[in-house]
Length: 347
Image 1 (cartoon, rainbow, N blue to C red):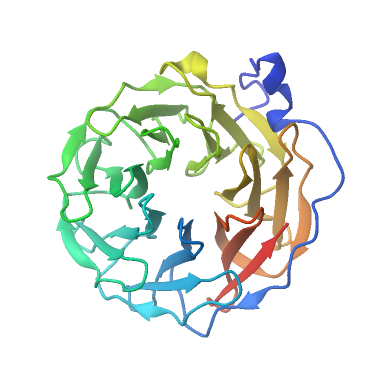
Image 2 (image 1 turned 90 degrees about the vertical axis):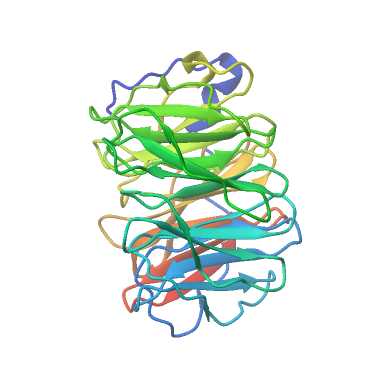
């Protein structure tokens, strides 16, 4: 997003991406998550059972997963598969989880978690040119969306808790992988950049798409989207042309471009994508890896304003993934220079 990005904020929303308050509260130490060598960014999600789960691609391109009980991580478990993308992991809104990724042939692999046991990563199908992005479309139901092999269009499949639907196209032209998040009201909102690097969004209601809307801006990395903890709302983020992190929130209601608050800067000099999570309803934290020092930085939204990026430290590569813990805190996971994962909990 350039500094010329849209800033048409309603009065009550003006603080959402601007403002100052004291430095982010304390974060815990970095905790090493085993010695497994990882070959991707992690993808993490909170389950209503109080667990967080994370998936990643191993050095041999299989899907590996770990669970966090708020205190300790399980050992990474290898679920197999032959992956060529970062995984996308999400809860299903009913205490279960799905992790999906693009396979070597362009088809999607997916594994499911019943709260206790994981399945193997099984071939689902489809023909994709990006990794999928997955989010719960209803309790027990998960939508996964990826770029198709046809001209940058989208293709999607829905898991109903038992089986995956046939992949279905969504006509559009995009230059980035989609990013999706559940809005807490039975919808999933997905975004991507178009050939001009402007950001477009669409909303899925469980059976049909509402139509693409353009929100402007200029994204220079993949989009990321997160629930906001308020019914009907999501927040999406992208790296702008100045290497800062920008955000835009859909405020709920009828689907239209005017329902978005507009792109606003969180500042920073960041890697291509941040990881964000709700701490309590209407409040959240975003973690990024800094361009100049490869450290982990966080920025906290208090409900009225962002506090500015605070340096937590470490020596990281890639992009972090953060998940709510349902306790007012979030866990953020990242891969370090040794290609092993570490996590930290805060604020």
